Image 1: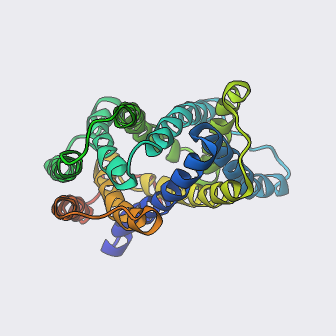
Image 2: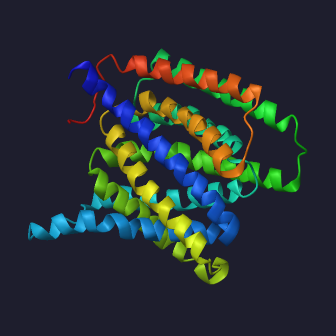
Image 3: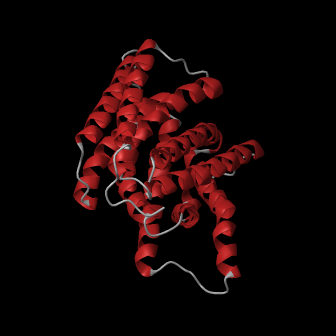
Length: 302
């Protein structure tokens, strides 16, 4: 595999993070308007409706059932359940905190995921991956210190932080499930079950938490759903072709997206500490990309 092909998983992961950051921006607005639960449920159901035909139609044209095998279906269910609560807690946190700061705090997930990858996938943690994650994590800490050092610790902020930490722990484990899932199923199938299972899980709570949204909120959620599907497919494709420990530092580029989108959508300002932290995050991503120049052990076939 030549160097350009080795770089493709990193480019796909970077694009996927950007699409999911756009989704976060639209979802924050929708969650503020319709409530975090309603926005999260509709995003999952609309996303499933968008992607399912691309999986079902080719399957039916072949005239044979290609329903996932039991082991594969177990992974789909596992990730769908995890993602449902991960997304709900994250979007709830977005209603309590600025977008960019929420994304920055979520960067503890890739750091935790490195050690999940070692414990659950048996991946050897390379020094480059450790250094990249630590540098990126320090960058996130610089940003958080600069922002929250100027803010009063209100009840809403505390609720947002608790929700984010819970979501981040689920997200770290989610990286490992993505790695396993993407090695046994295609991106379209992964995206279909990711949204479908998550939506069905959340639907169980509708009698208690549902509130009817207005048309503008539904429009924002529909756009967010499209970004969710395309971003999830890009990330699934990337994780099928490179190790989790090599790709997870790319998640730190989400702050670059969030800084721009937070200003465009919500007029959130970017401070000097934010710029300093972002520079460290970029350095972490660069170190991770340099690792891509080496052969990836145990990668899935192209």
